[in-house]
Length: 193
Image 1 (cartoon, rainbow, N blue to C red):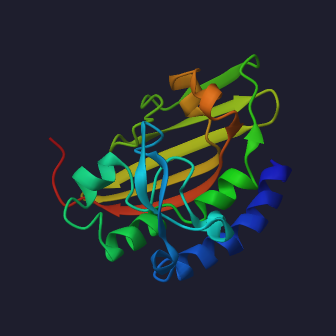
Image 2 (tube, rainbow, N blue to C red):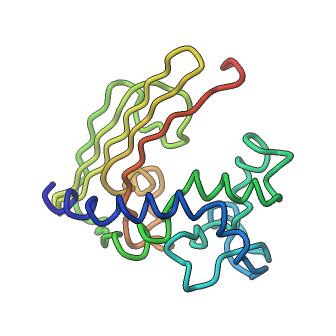
């Protein structure tokens, strides 16, 4: 836990800087070939140059975002300047979390999982609850979600481990668990079906 707190002291200033710079960053983007839709495909889309990689999400998406972003969240804006700014605000300092703060993951180690009944909730849906995953190497992931009417609060701490439980083959593409410290506030425009 001490290591996570120390890394958080590094992450928070970069996170704040990423939020402040997001409106300017798309001006530096270039059309480049790379992963899109959470590494599900490859294509030529706008990406930030290497010197701005701490603020980019180039490891799995371009500045256009993933398919969920394009179809559910911003179907009319995703390929606009504003859509790219919103995507960067949704994923602030993602490159820094992936390049600098990520930790190697060892799949042979045992994962301990506890939850409130919502189970893993890896799709980040509107299911209220929490889960906690830990490894014997000191990595952990905590996710908490609470919805009040159309307002959803969530908090993610630790390293992204649920992807390895959901699909152990993710280790091949992502051998380092990504750092995360993400408080979020979302407004649901439509009622859940």
